[in-house]
Amino acid sequence: MGRSTKTRSRKRKFCGNQYSSSMSNVNTSVVVSAEQKENKQRLTYNKLTGNRILDIEILMNVFSLLFCPVCSKANLFLFEDSVFGLCSNLTLKCNSSNCDFVKAFSTSKKYNKLSEINIRIVYGLRLIGRGFSAAVKLCSTLNLPNLSKMAYRSLEKRILLAVTEVAKKTMGDAAQEVKTLKNSQENVTRCGVSVDGTWQRRGYSSLNGCVSVLSIDTGKILDVEIMSQYCRTYKTLQGVQKHMKPSKHNCSNRKGSSANMESVGAYRIFERSQSSHQLLYTDYYGDGDSKAYETVKNIYDETTINKLECIGHIQKRVGTRLRKLKNKTPSVRGKGKLTDKFIDKLQNYYGIAIRSNVGNLENMQRTVISAFYHCCSSSRQLMHGQCPEGKESWCRYQRHQATTPGKKYIETSTGLPKSVINSVKTVYLELCDQSLLEKCLHGKT
Image 1 (cartoon, rainbow, N blue to C red):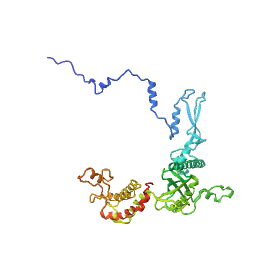
Image 2: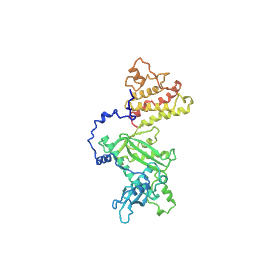
Image 3: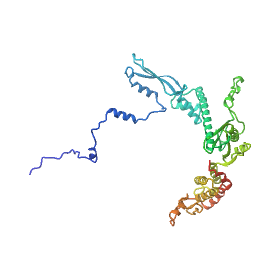
């Protein structure tokens, strides 16, 4: 019998795949028009807003490719008429001889003839504590045009006026919010405030400082006092004739040590609290070593201001004292002993213990002490006897004992050696005294 002449084709035929059955159900009769596709694609784009840094040559090249709306020729040319700071006035013109199309526009929005981008760069630099020199460096690095010094100073003054007005309004609204919250029927509302000061430079050599008063009830600023011991403008004009000096210029409003700025600023704020906001700051929340309290505690004739401790400052005091102990005592520091990580842990537990027992002095003291032994516990010596029992306890050991009784608990914390515990306990328990914790019952910071 002869060999068959049929041969198998080398090309494989398509016999279907896993998607064949699903593809057969597709309705091919639905046809989407090109206009509908274009509209759908247009809707997916987000509206562009804000500012962008753009190379002007790229923009010129793009405009050169576009057709003129009048003569329909690709003969558009972009040039710059004028520039003021970061804002440029550009003109788009058609170069065709028989076409007079011209379109002028600005690269930034304008408010009262002031360019928004120039206002923003001055305001932004002031927010980060920089001035004209920083603006020059920034713009030169980014290859951007820059404001002149006179224009920069002019914008600074305008921004200062606006910021001052907004600050006064917001502080007035904050005071009104406190009065509404207190719902007092008296002409003057009593409230608690937190007082703190800040300086331009660290240490006691700063020439400028600021004291602020924040409401404990709302957390909003009620008043500020800015103090300066040096005025550059007045110093510059000392050699100028008297008739050329400005008549009203009082930047330097404080003489004395920089360390005393907080006390003086607090006194000025408390002194005008009734006239400016109809408020009496009867509860003073501050750090323990605050000298400002001694200055203002009897400022109201008929009312003595109560001194209450700021929980945040008390909590930091734990870390401060333990770090002093670590630096002074070599035997307590090192690996497996008193480290910065362990100090931070103990400090956090101390703050949590106070905030979770607001208004209950006995529970607060008990929790603060038990938090110390809880943190010091290790696999060598379990020290959870004073931790609260039950399934809802914050102590993992006590939760384990309540949920799986009889099963051995594995302690993962390294804790502290017994010799170190004895040294740390003396310092820590000083901050567990009831007379101190009593001032923290408010639970505010």
